[in-house]
Image 1 (spheres, rainbow, N blue to C red):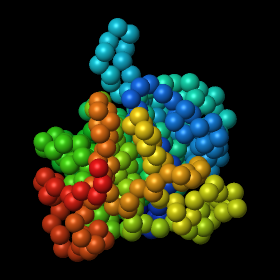
Image 2 (image 1 turned 120 degrees about the vertical axis):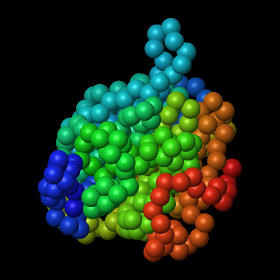
Image 3 (image 1 turned 30 degrees about the vertical axis):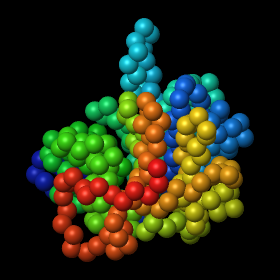
Image 4 (image 1 turned 135 degrees about the vertical axis):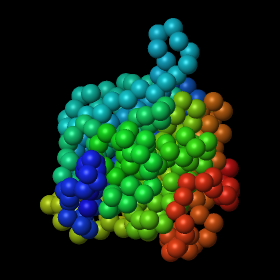
Length: 319
């Protein structure tokens, strides 16, 4: 169940029934050696297909990108969040085709909770020089009360599990971990607490793009969509058994793009399950590491202590 922020008397107001997912979304992210657009990176047809997915993922959309102000050289994160459907939104069309940046993340939201189409719950969330978008469901959210320190919990503006997940990543960064380490530590804690949740996420800073693919224990079927009144015959490609799959395409010049299912990824590479990928935005160096050291850990080993200490360096999967 999703819960509202704790009241002063520490009581919790229940706003969801147990067992229902909070949201299912689409992720797209890229990093490039020069300013470019989503359309140039994935092609006209895929860009159109991505926007058409907002007919299903119709509870808002958002994007974060890097840009420098006039006369400035230091790029910073800019963002835009819209809580209405993007299918016929000319602003989304423009951002996909005519808004260049060297790095961008885009999120299409399908909310299945009681907080639909509210800007505060629309991804990506931006704080402390980071932008974060998530695809999955992490419930019940009251468990985050034991994971987040009060000063971090107080910075969470909305009601979603995703923003709480982001809070845990930021908490780890505040504790001195690199962004990759902070995300890895957060995923390990959350997999232990929520073993059937998808933790897929994209995280952008001024220096790096981090992509988490951690959904090996989460599953979506046609029945999942049927519960929310969505006809399976209207779903884009890859929206049932492969719903949480991520694919990537890396060009010779270092341009790298990651995408959820729903566009044509023929010729792309499937991102291995339970991995974290990192792109250095200055050099475009690419690393991909395992999030867990063993299969039991990946499934959420019972009894593992919850904490946010720096993780043991994960096994290198590919570089």
